[in-house]
Image 1 (cartoon, rainbow, N blue to C red):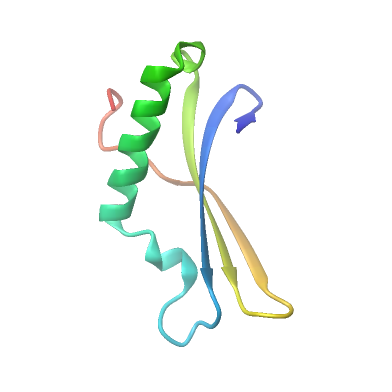
Image 2: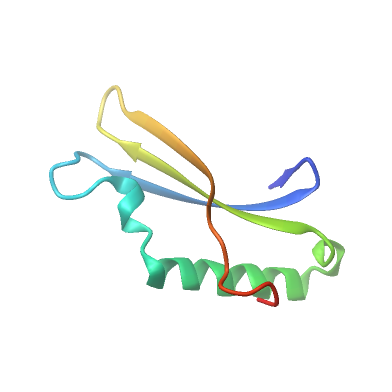
Length: 83
């Protein structure tokens, strides 16, 4: 998704309840690395996004019926800028 010129990758996580762990906590370091690698591959295959700033968001959805939705903008960043 392009958000004001920023290429945004969004990871959506769902939990039917918070009894085990909040949905946002399921995007651990290992999952973040996978998302970052996927983003790098996407940009490598789509040159038109090569000069875009990238952002990684997480949308956490919890509950059934009337779920709570938490959009965490810029939830994590790569360890370095070279991807």
